[in-house]
Length: 157
Image 1 (cartoon, rainbow, N blue to C red):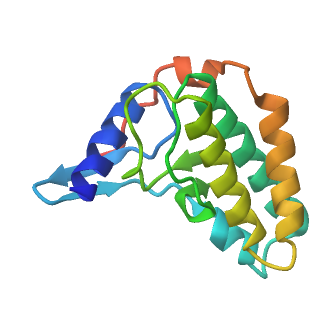
Image 2: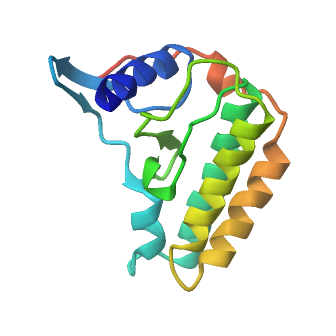
């Protein structure tokens, strides 16, 4: 059931213009997503990335979640492992907790809380990641993004 919720949520968000990776192929019992980049967990724990690169990804994640909330939707469980960064944009994955109804303050607050706890658990620098994420979220909160209203690029084959 969680798998079917994930797939349905993915389709709903894709058609709503929310940044989720394109579905490359799907069938009974499976679907394959395009590469969306590394998870924020992998980015924050990487020894090969600079602190600036890690903070840039956390900043983008805060903005992306605020944009999602600005259209009255909530991810449901936006842990750092469920947000991917390709160096250009954050894309959401693992949507089995997403609900296709308007998100009230409690669901949005839960999203922010989960993301902050996830940031704090990343490493010694977790507090910094949480600060960057929350600063970007607060700066972007309430702004409706053109990104969500423009059509997606064509899906890859």
